[in-house]
Structures are given as C-alpha cells and as structure tokens.
Image (cartoon, rainbow, N blue to C red; front, top):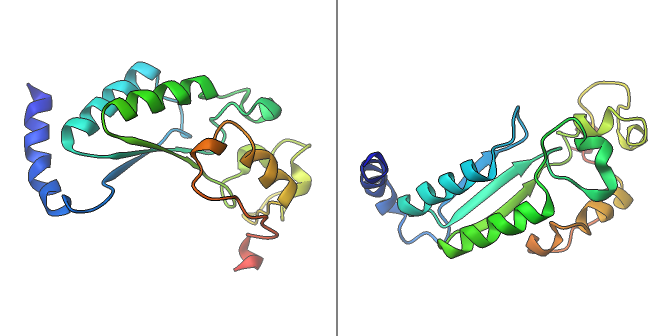
Length: 163
C-alpha cells in the first residue's frame, strides 16, 4: 500500500519529466555498508514503480576489482557477478543500470595503500589526486567495461593543479 501511495505522489512530480530520455536515481554505495542484493532489488522495484528508467550505483572502493583486492578488502564490495545479476533485474523492469566509478578526487581508499601511492599527486596527504593512463586502462578493462558507453581516455593529471 505504501509503495502505491509513494508511486502516485511521485508520478505527479515525474509527469513534467515524462518526455526526458532518462529519469535516473544515483545511489552512493561507497559510504558505510554496501546494500544487500535484496535491498537493491527492492529499491529497483520502487524506482520502476515511480517511473524511473535509470539507476546509477556510485562506487569508489566498493567494487571487487580482481586485480585490486587490497583496495576493497575491508569493505563489503559488489562483485562482477552481482552487478550482472542486478543489471538483468533492472533490465527486466525497464531500468538501465549505470555504474558510476568515481575517480580523480575520491581515491583516498586507493592511495592509502603503498602500491597506489605513487599515482597520487600528493602521496602523503592533501586533496590533490592524479591518475596515470596505466591505472585508467586497468580499471577500464575490468568487468565494468561492458557498461561504459565510450572508451576511457588516458588522463595525465586531474588534481587541483590540473584545473
């Protein structure tokens, strides 16, 4: 019953956007505990009932990159299999799943590890960060790659000094 009420109220607000090609919702799964698959499926059901057609999962260190286990070892990351399962669940409900792998200024969980520190613009603190093309290429070739709409360009510098 609550879902029907929420859907009815939200439909009034979404009616103005009905002609928009994408009506999306972004969920940050990099803060605290990553939602369970059951929770994510419930959220997709609600989004579908509300008329959304896009769902973004924002991640920083909460995807289980096979070659980068050090980064997510202390988190509860989503696996490639879970992403594929969620993608199918979304697709069955008319929603496009859009992975949102943050980079540049949000790599603290990466750069705190010695093997990634040399990639940072300010390796021992500060807010400056930098990616080199080898790390970008490594991340771009993982399980999220099929979801990307365009090639990931090599990035030389993206910290404060790069603005």
